[in-house]
Image (tube, rainbow, N blue to C red; front, side, top):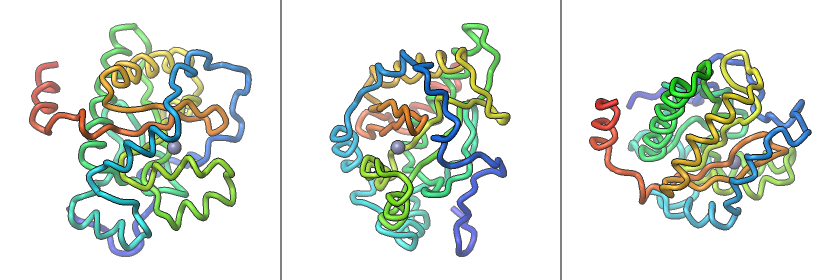
Length: 223
Ligand SMILES: [Zn+2]
């Protein structure tokens, strides 16, 4: 993998999406069914700790080393999803987490089609943090303790409030996303916590339930 020289750019794409979507969030229970996603902080931490990178990412320089050795891969926008600008995390995840995101994106797109819902990609707002970036985040978000799962390369946040490049709220797209995510949760390929204030689904990928690359590639080819 090639890498730009220091510093790694936080922005995965040039979308000016605020990293923290907690501002301007509909606070009217618009996502009653989101509450089904109630895997607790302890579960996320436990699963995250068993990630293939084997320990928390201490700082930027350690993260860079993981990228150089392919333990972490770049997360770019793909089929079904956009990756927003990130201020307190870096758009890098483990290979298995990347596979999970690809699979979720494919499933989400297929379900949009099935249900006749106009496709708008979902938005990944946060990925891997370092101990340093969590320390900064703690100053603006007192709940950042939960964010410690983000230190292991397998935890991401997906907005439930905004969809597509125009960041539109869409109940229809949200319903499809919930459906696709619930399928993945049922297979225990991930654990999910609905974050109302942070306006996201906090998702930790369970690498032990993710098949190898070829299997997923073949499944995608069949579709
Ligand atoms: Zn999170």
